[in-house]
Length: 193
Image 1 (cartoon, rainbow, N blue to C red):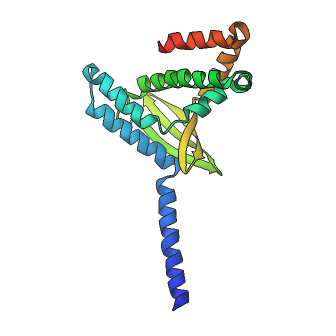
Image 2: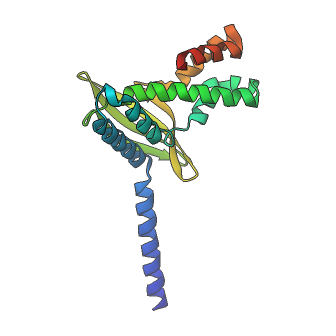
């Protein structure tokens, strides 16, 4: 009797754990985020609702993207060369730049444009492969995610085999070499200003 009860309890626990894991898989997180984005875009059409739409979209993407990690990786070795205050300042400005860039792209999404294809998970990192149909062309977008405090968060986006973070790192390294970190910050502030 006790053995059967223990087996039944174990089965219930495993079922609950596997359903929780399945619901919070990286692929499910990306799909859920896309579905929420579509709902917002459809419910706030046109230019008159642009500010409302963008604010709602921000609320959806902010917890899903690890902007701190993206900022750190985009500076590469230069990250360790600047002060903690400069790191915080860069993260704030860079995060705003990324959010604005991403918002301007996703607010035009329509049903059927994005297809979540697959996921590959290794320990606390994952890649979710998607395809996007735009103007008759299909192209891949891969989301790289890390598991932090039980939540999958995007730390890089790879568009047609070009990583967003690596692309920024190359650009920023060149600017820092010529204009120092202060020159990079001046340029970024102008972009988000």
